[in-house]
Length: 475
Ligand SMILES: Nc1nc2c(ncn2[C@@H]2O[C@H](COP(=O)(O)OP(=O)(O)OP(=O)(O)O)[C@@H](O)[C@H]2O)c(=O)[nH]1
Image (cartoon, rainbow, N blue to C red):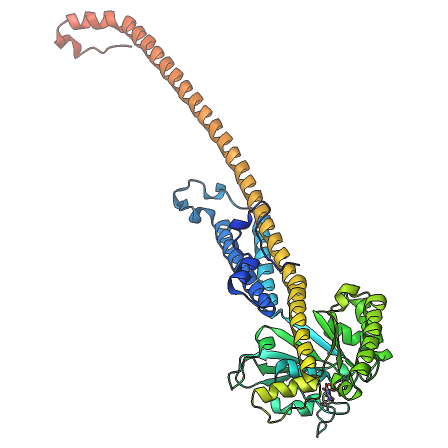
């Protein structure tokens, strides 16, 4: 999948496409996570532009003559003025409503990764290592008691939000609400079991100016209660996984995958088509004490079993792809090293061969970032891209229908005008004929009058005028 987003219509050449993400990415050398934001921005611009056209068209449909600077006050019969049909106007209003909803929806779109695994395998520690900060509570025993969803916020101070109340809670209460080992009874799963969500809003940029790359780039990270604490897999998947782009199974490299972990991912792969699953064999620092040979044998055994699980059982990746999906890491070492580098702690836990594990953790992060960005663009933004093309096509159909209807109306009017013109010509000819007839009749009449009254007139006119007074002319 290229990640190239374009609403250019078929037939457009690559050179005249205004929105080629590939070109933009090449120009600014953007890293994988940034591509999602770029794609989102480009789509936002596209939808804003489409919206302008829809508004403009709407203005025209409402009052076509105003748009064309035609003064209707001089129109003899305004009710006969050409109008856009209700159907087309409604069609356009519907498009406008869809654009508004899509713009609102995709502003909320993000890249989402969900971490699963058995209690104490190190899910929270891994998330903290990836965030370069101790955001989530971590520790021995069963700690995470509900789904903790970490998101970026622009505020300087982070906050919490429960799924049942809107009120923002201070970040300092995370231990009370999200941690089964909390020191009071406010831990979340009172109703709704482990399926509850506590949203953890963490500043994208910390007070010391450190930019959190994942949160900065719209990545939402979900930590889950251990898969061994509850069998509510289906409801977990429905509530938290249907929009997930990537799943990370944090397993314990000191043991083997448990049935609960396998079952969970069987359910996931049944409900989602080809989910992107990464497996982190965590606590790999423990292998350092066993010597390299033993570590290599254990690693091979894990790799073989995990390959069978992902490729042969779940069918979620190929034999080639699986190499990029399995990692042997120590999240604790990684977290502590990063905290030390940021000056947040003095000493860092490190075992022999730490550097190899660090390289592997960083490789996981790189591949993970490429995968989540590609998946989110593909599943989330491409749907909006397709919808944008649909909307443009519908607008075009709508305009075509209006143009056709107006063409029909114009033709009818031309026909009516031609008919009126020929009636007018006929009337003028009739009038000219009538004038001739009247003139002719008048002449006949005059002649008749003359022939009848002329002798009398001449006779009288030859007599003296005094004789006229006592006599009258009889007609
Ligand atoms: N040695 C070692 N310890 C680790 C590693 N990762 C995590 N731990 C420790 O394991 C304990 C449990 O880690 P968490 O991150 O809380 O485990 P979790 O999977 O989130 O556990 P729950 O929240 O209870 O489900 C903590 O004491 C961590 O310090 C690791 O890579 N190596």
